[in-house]
Length: 297
Image (cartoon, rainbow, N blue to C red; front, side, top):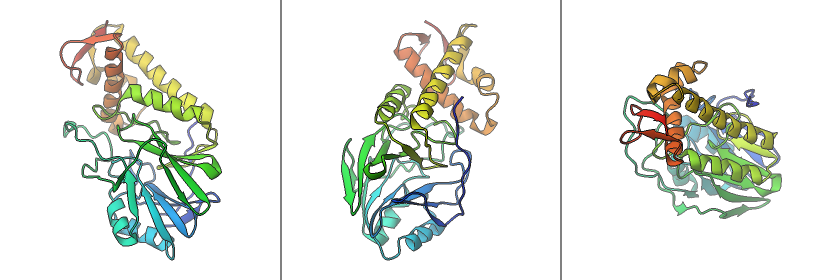
């Protein structure tokens, strides 16, 4: 079982000091993919970095500007291009003069319009500076380093805060829920590798964009990976009963999950299937998709 952390104390628009170097303002965009809303982080004092500005909401922009009053924003850092993370970056940069750092949104075939799998894409996201793994961002009393973590999306990147041995984990690891992996941009093989990469770095705290921090990092990430392996085993067990489609197996595999999330769950199963097909453990006729018939190889 994953030891989820779901308790959180906050008010929308309020700026909370959550650690010696970190403040957080939560946007009023709660939902099945965002939990209580997007947590925008401010690192440092005087000259600061802002991580994941969030959705393009004027109320959230005004709350951030109030929190930043009298300070200089030197960096705006974006973990990935989903619409609950990146759209406010440009309006915030316009007001503050800060530079936006991130990895540009990929151009991929759209998911079927009847499949709601995330809060939506910010397809036009273009940072001012393209991030590479290990890139360093500094201010008075704080140092952030980019940790590329593809899997949830191909352009996902986390940010390590050296002074607190903490990681702003975006949607790569969340305390309140598992992470959705949505092909073709999301990749399950990349996700497993990124989990191991983060686990090996030995952080004391993870600060997800949604929800509360994770304090017991190594066992939490291990449980996260074990959950994925268990889901993979369930998929293989379903296939052992005979050929089947993803859509047919999801209601059983995710019986305990909010039905609103079943479309997203189906995409995660597809991500598992694509990895299993790549490994030669599963086969399907034609192109692998939600309606394809799969069988054990």
